[in-house]
Amino acid sequence: MLDIALVHHLVSKYPSLVAVDVTVTKPAHLAAVRTALPHYMPEGLDFDAIAVGLPRTATPAPLLIVAGFCTLLLALAIAVLRAPGLHFGRGCAI
Image 1: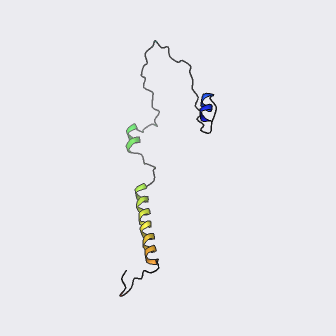
Image 2: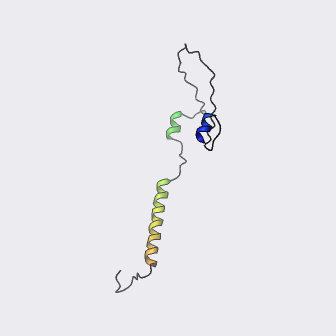
């Protein structure tokens, strides 16, 4: 089914709608020229400040991993202490 959809340029159950423009924008005999585009930065803000100085908004993943690990350890400790047949007291061994 996918092969038929691809051959006939139909949308299948795996849609990938991509527009392809074949309009020539530059004659083939001309060489490509690099041009620097202007950066529209707010006044007073330096480009280096963006990479280093601005706050990052990602989650505190290392802290969340440690909190999750501690929670798992606590759940394991509770499960071991509440397990039937295990008694922790004077004169009892595990």
